Image (cartoon, rainbow, N blue to C red; front, side, top):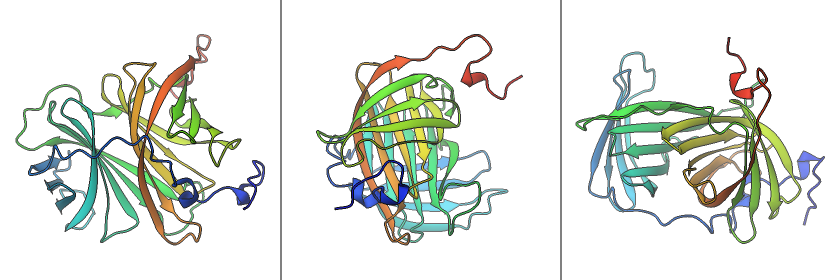
Length: 279
């Protein structure tokens, strides 16, 4: 067995090396959407219809004005997790396009949705992580739309959260700015490893956030949805998606975690990271 050397990233585990047991705290798959047809429409007029049964989703993609994505349809396996009342996190990995995975937030109460597309680039590009995220807020066709649309947020900045994924896996996250966070493995096969990577955070409902990160050492990225309303009992659901050790085979698995707020940083006036780049 290779010993992990924090300073030598060539010894770090590939994505599939993390998977065994990492999903112990995953919530049960919800079939609440089974039998439903949900069509989401974004501001370009792009329409995506989803027809759910217990374990598969049949979808049809019709691009709107300015959307260069080709029309497509297929059926994929999916998992759905109930985040809050009438709020679901749906995850599926395309069969027809294995370098893409979809995280779909469906808010039946507000009549809104948010799709996060994880895309593995064909090759490494200067200045970009190998896996990229595309965010597409939309509304649910035929639903009464209310509340605020999902949007980027700076609320998490300054928080330090301990996350427990299983009896063997634990990490901490320090949310530094709109673009960066630091992670450190506290328990598990990556114990002692740490890095600072790119992130994006969006608010879905008050206190409920999408947190997505993109790693630069291992070719992978994650999308999570986390309920921070009780800071002593934070709950998250998520997915990791990227390439295996060969750098050729897409690897996709879901997980869950229980978290708690350890501390919050407060900066002096004028030095708040949430204000970087603002006049």
